[in-house]
Image (cartoon, one colour):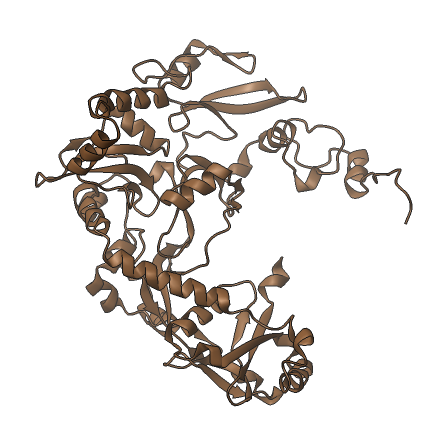
Length: 522
């Protein structure tokens, strides 16, 4: 995997009007490719693109946004480390591109998807400007979200320390100026762990800089130093997998329709291995998949003058939408919308496209069914209760129903009391599916509405997954996961085991048994 990060390409460009063959060295102000003669001795001027990054995508997006004659240019890629041997060959082939079409096919770049995407984005931006929902979202932020001063007052919360930001370095590397961010209001958002709106950045590649659209955020390292993270506009996501969570058909449908996953899922922190219950959304401006820990999301009790009931709060904590909610602003104006947790908001949003006036809603209901309007309130209440009473782990009032044992281990009176109080209960000598003893923690998870098993104490301020003595054992024996150090062993793991326990198991790991087949020999 490490080698892929180092794979670079350069772009050979053919001017279809003149037949001139050059190598891309950047992008001119008018969107045309900046070109340098296709000679190996000019290699230092060639713009190199990470084969597995977003720079190439952004180059072509800006090319189609700005260039008045995009069809004039044809683009071909060759590996950067093969420039010396391939450049001369490509020049010869491109003298007669039609005759050499088949040979050139693996190198030719199909730019039509980029052109189509830019056209769609420009059309969407035009529509967005006319969308009244944008104003509603702005008002929502004013009425619902905490001010920076209120946020700072929360225990344990600290905004990003601006003194840790090297503004000169950011300006040199990305063309980002502090004054511009402050004037637009983006700086305040970023210092409070949010993103800017779309801004122009001017990264430098190969000694040349060109303009790209991106949203910006700050990231702190372990020593408190702050770096800039650009979020470039991406192609539409495939929505296959994200942080070891595989999207279901319903997940993909929800993300495409509302921008929100619609439920809480467990995501794996790639740096620590920590399993974190999280909300997932798509950044509607960049198409980037984003997430936020459930613990960092605030569910309001009131929006404007409108109370959010406990049942509705519980639905929102579970990621579910609260549909057709009548919201009254502080100025007395009313509208009907769908509420749902959104990662970008780090809280509840008005789902775009769902805002309607109460009169419009009533008119539509009357049109569809004269009796519907009268019954709607009862129906919504019933649906809300149905969502909350799907399991038997809670009482009618939403409190935690007591349990006396788990996996055959009886609770002490203190453990029973701790569980009902929402605390973690440590269970030792739990028998896993392979018959070996393990240690685990049980705690009621309000987002999932049921007790949930943890490998480390979830009441600790920070979970670090690898520390628990039974984590690997339970993951392999119970969950069917694979531990690289023991993946070839034929016996289940014992308590605390993360590696082969003896010479026999070591031999199994190093020389796995070969599978034999009865098929015909080739």
